[in-house]
Length: 291
Image 1 (cartoon, rainbow, N blue to C red):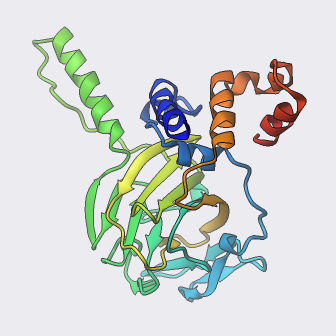
Image 2: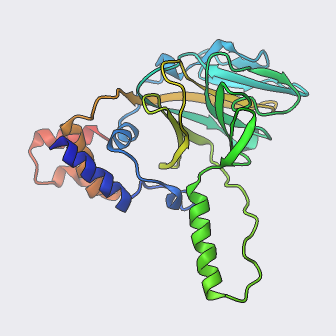
Image 3: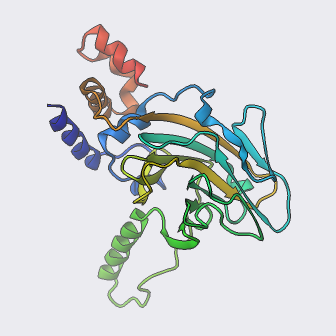
């Protein structure tokens, strides 16, 4: 029964995507029940060690706040600098949130995942996270994915499909138009971005504004520690890290799947009316605790 319900929830996700800003809502992709539960679960305590930047795994141009949750890049000319999280993971599904103001990014502002040996300082202005084979990064200003020192594709990929559909519709209405395509400006990524690492499946994706934008990288190495990481060339850039939640590779509990199904059908606009549902008080309490 649990497997049937899990498949049913995946089908529901294709019909209704998470709430988001007007820009990112059309870019959201269906999520698995495992990820949907993780994203909807309450965040763990901010004091969790997984919310800290590492005092040792950082460029000397990055200084940390006393709680180690904020890293600030000192002004430095012709230098690219990075910092890794204090704690990495080898298994499970995990979600972190990176807070980085667009006004303090500059060029080469990258967030992603790295192994322990990824370089965290280099001369000149360049991408560090994704600049070698030991890291995978998303450059926020250009929306480009980086790995192995090369740009791969523009992310989110769903954007290209939607744009192609719009262009095809335009051409069908205007067959005499000479403009078959236009240069598309990068998306402005807001200050809060969630990293979604599934170490069991070997995938990394990102979520913005409540919308999961899909898998960015596949075939990440298994059985090795992977760390959230950022790199910057902007003096004064302040970057915060927060571990939100995670889960093991075990299938979600049937009770949790049922709760998720109810909340998805109720919708965010009516979640404050859960206590009016024809359910026992114990279930009311459980559903309210899911918010």
